Length: 285
Image (cartoon, rainbow, N blue to C red):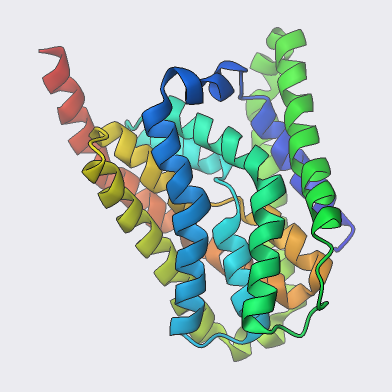
């Protein structure tokens, strides 16, 4: 299972690359406000919330580190689909996922080292941040770039195969989640109450606060919807893969989070669907 996790993450990132264009990265220059507000929420608010919630629930050190690792992970590919279904700003969602995936090579090792030191976790005293950064780069940026290259060179093939690749990637993700939980079933069962409470609190708090911040910054409803869903649906596969490099227990919060993140984000998307539809109709009048 441990050997399969990196391969699974690489496939998931390759499938994301198949849906991206270079314009998705340029949007930070052409439409900076929404992207920057979303990235600040994702790269600063989310991991800091994870620190606070781990303290609130007095999680064991390894679980606290895992929660921060999850909070520091970039947005997941399903956030783009849920944003589309909610009639949110899908282009903004895709841009945040793409840019946060690149930023993860720096932010994930940084927050991971801070969490290990802060919670005094029984893990290596000095995390090899360079080594982890290189692994994150190899497992995220490289397959992402390969997916984009395939899309540029063979768009017809991608249009025929993209949905199949995404379904396979989703299946692989579910296998990773189940595998992470089953491999540590005793620990999950022993701490299920606090793990569910902490991960659910992080999920709901991150979505609610990011939505409020986006609206306070005068982003419109579709943009605020994209920002909020991006904060709710993380790339948990990355958190599982990086956590497994340290200890299997570090992967558990991300696996537990994955069990319900689509449910909460899906309910939010459904609630926002009508509001966004009404907002869009008002603009066309």
